[in-house]
View (spheres, rainbow, N blue to C red):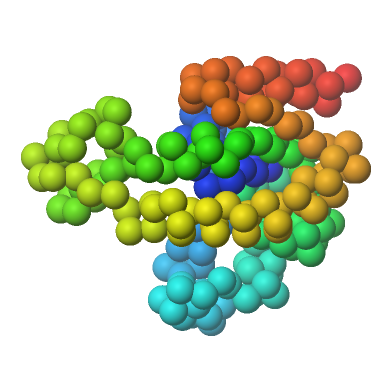
Length: 212
Ligand SMILES: [Zn+2]
């Protein structure tokens, strides 16, 4: 079974993806991982991606799709893949759905206020890069003892923009997969543990459905 997971920044998508891939032995692929692999291989497309990343631009859609297509057509990614947040636009999502077999799309639905609170609690260590939250670590890095800081873009104003852009771009994708009867939405305003349990239930129900 191949799963695509989508969710707003701060929805817990990264953490849940890691937990899911571990529990169900899924190959977890994020766009970032795929880009890094392409860049590391030093291909011409890798160079274009590298330039875009360095300039803080979005990857050109055609290059992005070619890279994804190549990567996903490899035998090892035929099955048991968890795609983490791929497709920033409806066109990209449609294209992905045309060349790759996606069985389920899990949408982590979160309210703005919930994710804002999560984002504001995020902390990073400026010295060793350790990522944590103020609830877990207070203001001191448990790895090296430095004072933790917020990430520069983890403030209300910047986050509001990111969230709005996400909503605007993602709602058509959600509708598209819903019309295709592939979408499972969960209310992800909950703790990571509860959200994880909800997603596990979806995966277990879906794999029964597919076996039938
Ligand atoms: Zn540190």
